[in-house]
Every structure is written in structure tokens, then in C-alpha cells.
Image (tube, rainbow, N blue to C red):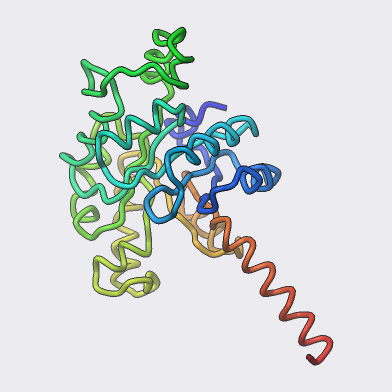
Length: 255
């Protein structure tokens, strides 16, 4: 599966989020049929060594491995790509200039300014030419829209050549509007809708991280036209199932 092609053609792709740094979690989630998983290095304890294990395990389970890097910064982007990640999710992209920075860190000259290293992605030195072509043809760069400034500048971000899609981070977006986590407030919903409308206008894949493990909201987002959709995350799948089961047991048995 070419994720880049599906994004270019605005086809629905279903992924999820990894926060627990263990390959068994990847294998379990792989059995669900996800097309891609995002390794979260921004808000978790997952370090570079574990990220490489997770990238390898994701790819071995026929999924694309994306990494949400800790920030829009040269070294972390270069490292995860040299480890063999299929793409990056860049947090807090708020302008065209910041989108261009991310592209520059991810791509080799003359397009970007990424330094050349020979590691896993380049087959430890014997596949650099092949990898250069892959970067041009298949590397995925997703800008995370999670600040009201990004909403105000959304048109310039999504028309930046080299950005393959955007994904809305509802928690931080609502936080930038003074109401962390209140992403169902009318003003936050209006900001989200502006992003979705502009993406539709420019035929740019719009994404959303649907936090809830109940699939209802995911289905609603897909019907609204979102095509790059992350369905919940590992600890919500685990926690929600466990809490619902124990609650049902206690209610049934009166304990």
C-alpha cells in the first residue's frame, strides 16, 4: 500500500496512535487492520531506541510507521527518518514558514537541507540511491493543526508544496483558544470546520485524531470528508474495555 498515493487521491486511510513503548502493542493493534500507526514521541516516554523497535515492528506487520516528532526540529526529524520511518507528523505547525522548515529537515538537497546519513533507511549504506528516490516518491509529511494561529493560516499551510496532509489535534487547538480539552465548544468547532472547509476547497487530505474508542465519532468525521483519520489510541482501547467490563460485572453481580 502506498500511503502517499492514498493521500494524494484523498482515499480514506485508518490509523491509530501509539503511546505504550512495547512491540506487543503494535502486534495486537496490527491485528485490527490499521493501515498506519503514529509513534508519539512528543507526549510519551518513548525514546529513540524504542522508536526504532516500534518502526521495525509496525512495518513487519504490514503497516506504515509514522512518527509524531517531539517538535519541528532538524535532528529529531532526521534521526527518525534515518531509522526508516515512512513519514512524520510535525506538531504545532502554525505557518507556511514552519511547514517549509519541516519539509527542509525531511528532504535532501536541492529540495531541502537534510544531512546524509547511512543507517537503517539507507540499508546501512548499500541502498542510498534507492532511498533518495523513495524520499521523493513516498515520504509522507503531515502538518499537525493544533493552534488557532494555524487555523488562521490554514490556506498557506495546505498549499505549501511538500505537505501531504494535515491532522487536527483537538486538545491543543482548544487549549490555544483558552479551553483545553473542550473541543466541542462552538468556537472550537467553528475553527475545526474552517480547516475542513479549506482542505476540501484545495483537495488536501484533512485528518483528525478521534480520541474516543467508541467508533461513532470516527464514522462522523469520515462522513464529513476527513480521509486521514486516527482512531483513538492504545491506552484508551485497553482502559475503556477494562472499565466497561468491570462496571458490567459489578452491576450484574451487585458488588
